Length: 558
Image 1 (cartoon, one colour):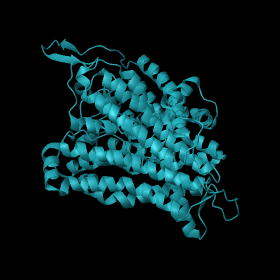
Image 2 (image 1 turned 45 degrees about the vertical axis):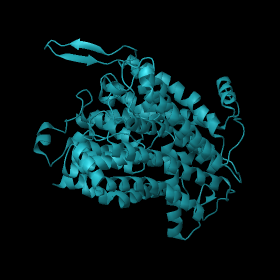
Image 3 (image 1 turned 135 degrees about the vertical axis):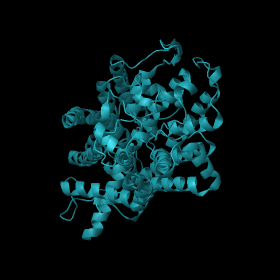
Image 4 (image 1 turned 180 degrees about the horizontal axis):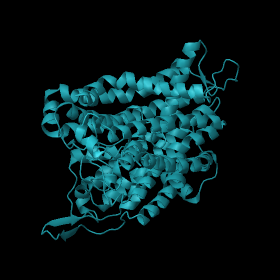
């Protein structure tokens, strides 16, 4: 029965994504290649004083990304610091500076790491005008950067890669907003709440008192998943019945997380003029996703190291009965394989190897399929590395889609995939190496000692640097050290890779396209898909295996 349930849910997700792959991918390709602007878009361009038709070089595109993000940082920070004077504040005080700093970098960086309980910390105005708006625009930034990288492969002898303001606006108005509205309506029909009710005090039949929160949750839930943001309206995130009430809404929310990342390879294929390239990329994404899902589910269903789990038929601690192990692992694998970070169960309560799979999903670089935009440009960078390695092995000049991969391109690609591991390993190391930081971490932040406590801190930095936002539930991150360290990891983990990806796009766009010859490596065949998957696994394994051996592997082998 368990196997059939697993296959039924996986097949449902696969069929829906398969049906949407071509129409949504083609629609997004038309969105970013069309010349006509909507009236609302033209009004926005006039408001901010930009010409959407003017092309930008990659440094100009990067400066626009950074300028837009910095404005978002100041705006959301101000909302939090002046919260108590805003309408619908629910009587909550202003967010203290350290937490406000961490939160604003988290949401602007598409991470949505939350070192706080949302229903006890931020009111409806901050939720809607600050956090929900960033759910839209930070996701749109990722899509815009992905499209710019695709143009790097598609253009010939060009000094420009598009216009950031046009890409950002179209991604918001034509892709994220319409699908989010549909998703919110579906979730409301499924029981997700959408209101402006104040917190209600309930007197239970046992004589106790319970405080029942309300709020516009459905509208934020839809875009937090669609934009692969992940921050919960409530502290329990998508395990909360007000955010994710039933087994079928659980599947709907999984689809919202996956639909754009799995359709973007089709957009890539259309824009470079070869649909087969899109099929190759999406196949690599799907193989990695299914492998991680199967492994994680098996670890939670059959952990031979614990007789109690074996007797119960699976590790149900920390999981909702309405989802079970199958639904919980489908959701949580999706949340960590994309950059969403939304959770439907407590990762801290997973088996050691099940929790390790959540770590591995992020350590792969979140390219299986990754976040909106970030997954596509991340796997394209890895494809460049794979082509270069293939060229070294057979003695050919490496080319990808007619663009030569030389020393300049490899420098940008290498800096791209080294950034995140550096942030993860340095941040984790400093947390235990510096006495003041170690005292804070071991005395306040870690709920569990030993290897599991180490895994909590490793997970936090992996989540932050990969812009995921999920956490092992046992960690207390609202401390001066972790607020500053994780906020910095989020910011650098978001914008340094964007800078290197755009630099790579500019270098490729400046080249002409080399003609296909007998010596050209086909990049649409199963051999290349295998090479790409192998490159991703090799880079991740060599980088992270030692630190995994200190945490979840050591814990699981005890």
